[in-house]
Image (tube, rainbow, N blue to C red; front, side, top):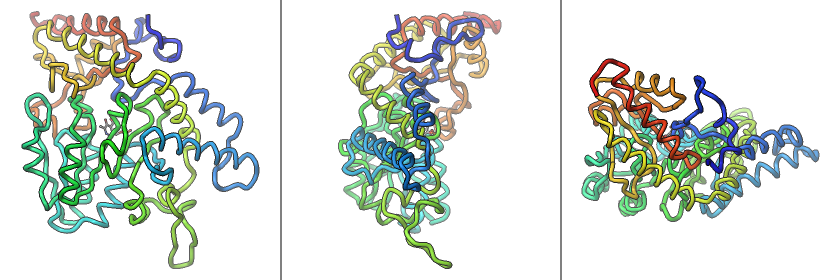
Length: 408
Ligand SMILES: Cc1ncc(COP(=O)(O)O)c(C=O)c1O
């Protein structure tokens, strides 16, 4: 029995006449009723533009929005509410750092170090900034199990390194990167560390101090919250010296005909009307995650991952990328291919059984090239998945080659 089923109405939706087996959690997670209600309550009871009105309704919206910020700050162990910037998603958070910090503090010849497994959101913005400033991207390559070795890290982070951009967890290989060790090395050479926690915070506790991160980015929708709300954490001393990324309403102090001065943090980085409903949904998602507890989430997912990897190992003609040992530096994102079958076909065949997986390059084309594949299938777990889900996935996967006329 799935103890979470009643909280997630989507999981009860039939798909192609079958029960939905949702294994695309790395793309986005489903939303519990408490999150849906938090958003609805906001629009029903106290919808107003925050920070702008002096009337009671607007004050309530402002308070709720700022309480959500405080809750995020507590959740990730930041020092101050001012260090929490609400954005649309992890991509916008990473662009904010690249354009506001990178464009203003990088110089010609500086190096930006990043793993080749980065999601395009933590790679393309750095390419744009590197081109504009004459800086260079230097890649860290994982070993055969998907892990970054100490040797690789030590040889690539040098006194030329000004920025290290790294995902806490890879959205393709599921590898948990040694962020703290990377940060220690980066800080020793005076570089800043940008950590993409989009795939970690749904599954592991993220503490910005323990990671020793200068910036942390993540998206609400991958951690039970609605789409359209994301977070950038930045150390205040860095955010203070960075110019605004987007400009317009709400982020100013005084505006004259030819120039403007800017609001203090965090408003300096929050131009225009904000997604208050999304922020409240994120706060409700944090409450839900706390209620389930990361210990339970990690234990459930690591059991499911082991069960899935063991089951896949019994099926011939399957290649799993990354670590298959079930190491602790590994989370429940499993990329794989079936011999002779395009990932899109695998996904369509599984879909007929109600199984939702992802097929494609997963916004990580440089990694696909490094792995010498065009695309992979990806099954990604969350705590509300069950062994029964995995049994259905494995049974469907076993049929794939036969359906297309290949031998077992
Ligand atoms: C590791 C990682 N970083 C960044 C992103 C971008 O997230 P979003 O599309 O919510 O901006 C994703 C999305 O899949 C991701 O997996």
